[in-house]
Picture (cartoon, rainbow, N blue to C red):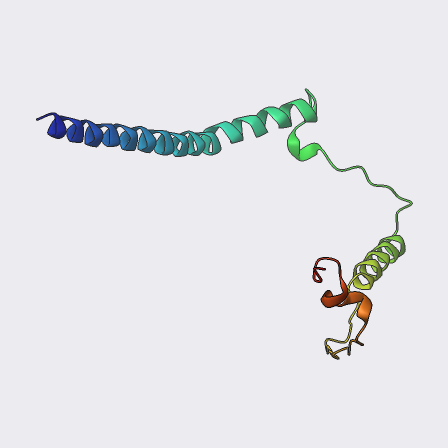
Length: 120
């Protein structure tokens, strides 16, 4: 009787863990969905109101243009960036040549002459 009671307790405990885990996962997914659906647009709207100023509309705000920045400058910057990124990836020869090195016999590295290999 006690064995059956312990077995049912383990099963009911497993169901509690399962249901708790499902509630946590799906609750988190629902919260993320609600945030991205409603919270993010509200935050972006508030950000636009704060950054545009009190009397301007969002469409009236234009980016500041620097008249000294010409197309030639943009081209020079883009070429410099391209050359820098291209320089990082050197094309090297992909052929490997493995030569077996011959080891000359040396009594200094031989185990028969070492203190541990030779017991007097």
